[in-house]
Image (cartoon, rainbow, N blue to C red; front, top):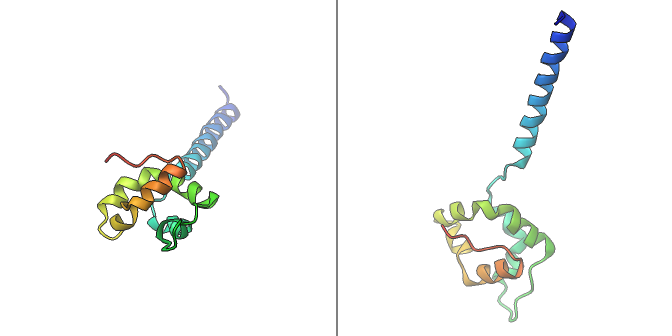
Amino acid sequence: MTKATSFVAIFLVGAMTLFLGEFLVTAQVRCNVMELRSCAPAISSSTPPPPPPTLKCCSKLKEQEPCFCDFLKNRLAKPYVNSTRVQEVLEICRVPFPQC
C-alpha cells in the first residue's frame, strides 16, 4: 500500500465517520414539552367540542413520543401530558400513550 493510497483510505474512513456522526445527531429527538404547543388549542380548548388536532400537532406528538415518559416524570409537564384530553388527541393522531 502506497502512502497516497493510505492517505485516501484514512480520509475516506474519517469522512464516513463524520457523516455517520451527523446522521446520528440529527436522528436524535430533543425532548422539549414546548414542542407540543401546536397542540394547545386541541388540548386546552374550553368550547365543546374541542377543535381537532392539526397535522402539525400530530407530527409533533409523533416526534416527541420517545419523550413522553420523561414528561410524565416532570412535575411541571405531567399535568399537561397526563390529561384525558391529551390521551384523546394522541388517539386521534394514532400515537400510543406511553406505558412507563
